[in-house]
Length: 278
Length: 255
Image (cartoon, each protein chain N blue to C red):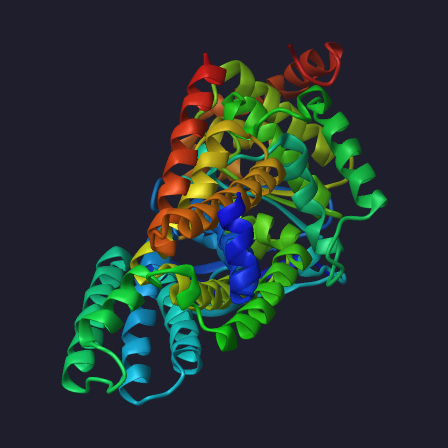
């Protein structure tokens, strides 16, 4: 506990990082419930790879990654969703193609145009697995992330009933006058935003754990949409905070620590679900 | 003016026609049954009426001031719904969404409407239960209650009894008949020609050239009707009132 207080006093940036990480986990978990139920989990995974590719281009061009990765990923999100609703192209194969080609392009660009400031493997590693320690998160990113996260949260709460309807039964919603396309696109855009923010901190390869685990854990135990969403949000916040504390005290990398916390939470909820089911 | 008019509709996927020259009209209070074999384009036709799918050619026109957010729809169940965490109330209430417009939340009047429709279909006791844990018949009632929340006069039902056992099937048909009797316009897709002949006022038989569209009595006299229903149809028709009174004697729904 003393160590924690010491760190928070010495490095004020940790306070910001804690807030942003918690907000991002919360957003990811909220969207996660809808994405998992719509069978879009793999789209989240594919998008994070796309974001990695975009970030590499930004690094090579010495731009702030987020300004390139954000539009790139949002566009990719909308395209992936279109593919998904078009029966002609196999969507899981398309996602696999986009994921692996983005990874390949990203790493290739990092090698062809190495940035002067840091090593190639260092850049790649922090993009893929997140910052090595919580102090490594840049203060400039923190404010932008906080704003985007707040936006996502607002969209989710404001369109909660529409998101439920579109997730539960797209045909019914469309037939009775709800603009399904608009809400699906909104969901894709917001997912893209969350993925880009999260990639800065937890890494491209670990974002899926923030999206899928809290939702799946919550659905083991809770049987109404509202309860599942609230529980999913709570799990995400608790796991993010626990993960950050462990990071600070044990100097572990942020992304994997939070991801492991989410795996542990899933195990607990799985067992609770089995016990309640009997 | 008719509620729905379809003119020279052609339906299909990616240029491949599965049904063409579909013409029919639906008037207020009609109970239209769309029958035909698997793959004859019944569900596609319904999706076209609902505007979920564009026809290859031809038009569907809404009359009598009918708007899209006044239609209730009972779709076939999807894979997603099998493991979806949702309470009965949440599902039924989502039928009121088209009354919300841009307002983000449900109003007390929407909740009252949902409660009223749950009462009407006898699922009030299930309000807090999880949708995926209900029996097939209960799930269909929940979806029907949702459709009623969305509807102010027109109800479209896509195979409402598929996968239900015979007793529950009869209950479902009798619920739909009551709704039709109360003034609702009903369009139903069915495999079950006997039930169609028993309950509907009009029949549209697709997947056959020429298509048949007309009243039930005309259908039984037509060649296509005779070959599909035969003399049994007339017998059913003769017994119609008897059967109906049996249902109504035991309350609205036969237990």
